[in-house]
Image 1: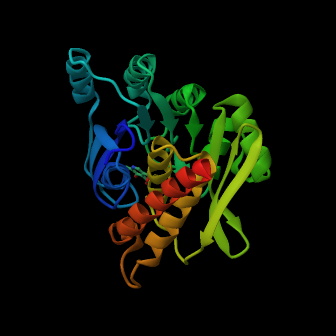
Image 2 (image 1 turned 90 degrees about the vertical axis):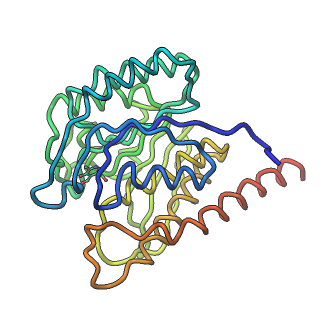
Image 3 (image 1 turned 180 degrees about the horizontal axis):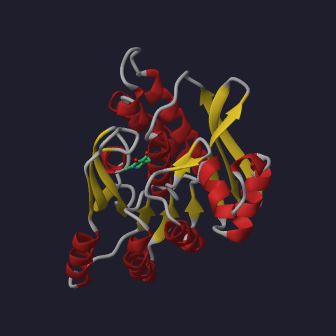
Length: 286
Ligand code: PXL
């Protein structure tokens, strides 16, 4: 029995064939959460950029044609999720689409994918940084890691300060709610959030190694859960557990650049979201 109207999310990010990130992560995760995900690829890559010598095609022309065709269709979205962009030159079109669908009531979620471990990704320019700053100002929730937060705030990575302070500055300067990913607490790893003046956090077992695409897994799961009606802290709890559980499936000896075997964790994600939704209904009834 359907208990809610199905949510439809426009996902604007790259399609990297190899490496489990962006669309190859977002689409299955959102589907498992019961959200219809509509992709708009910003770039086509043979593999994500942690690999050497990748083939990369910019999709701006195709995005323009698609956007024009969509303008002729009776189309609306419950949300728009912007992640990795092909470059700053795509910003005018992305902004136009965001404005178009926000006018129709879409909620905006932005993961300002620009770097990690204190370093910007290749293809990041001043125009891209400025564009992401503008997008974040229109968003309901943003999902930077510490590297991206310092780029948004215009401070050196090492001088970005404590997590709570970063989150406060992000909510003052950008979106009303912010999630900071990749936050360590003791032996655990997770994410912190600030929304309506309240700091929250979710942490789970930390596994050795570093894996690309975990930020995309976290944001996709959290955004899907938010669209299903869970509050931010619960959505984050679900997402952090899902990422940690996915990393636990990594087999020693596998190239970590291939990303984490999140596919094996999807059944748990589906069970967990249903359980959390049922608990919410029971709390309301009880
Ligand atoms: O997961 C972030 C990401 C997304 N898309 C591409 C990337 C990366 C990180 O390296 O290279 C193409």
